[in-house]
Image (tube, rainbow, N blue to C red; front, side):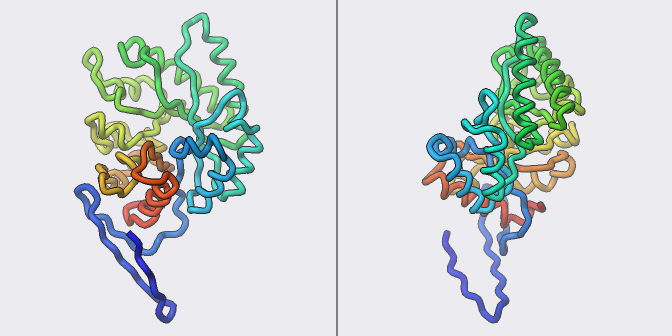
Length: 291
């Protein structure tokens, strides 16, 4: 929706209201200073062809935090850590978080895996990153509680390495974590068997909902564990096919321990950059988003 504004005597107040999936969301003049993050996987095709230009466009829109999904062999999207950090800085975005990881190793492969993590952590530290997030597990983590416990022990070890470098380590969910195995929900098993001092959780608000669970229930049961959020919907935020009602979730941000929230869009109704701007505008204008 496009609204043409006119300014009269230097004071204009505009209030719009739209209904978004079961809740009334009020919009007013954009609040300044909100640190809305962006997961660069959202614009993965553009990042392949023009990473610098894509980051510049996102920064110009008003995104303030960048979360990468392009780490490999000590580089980010083919750039050295300092160079990629400089690209983000020039756009006005803080490169603060990154998705990467390795599947849980067996005993024979443990030392090689830890060496991979040493290189990875050093690169992220050089780029000034504050969070490293593993975005998934292989089947070992989903098929038995014993296999999942292997992952929990592994994540605790990686978290200890990250802590030593001044970086927080965490895990990002999809839907598989909310199935029941041997009488226990996998996500609950992970929360119980990881050390809060070493492992935080980046909750994907859409995928937990698609998995049949309520984010607020987890905030209540495991307060303080969910430092990062992926704010996601079926497609871009606020679209005609939106499913999510974010207000009750953001109303419980303090209970969750949320420190930063990040837009991720996996599919778009139209052009990706238009969808990214629409998603940003929704959060910047939503009264329930406080910071």
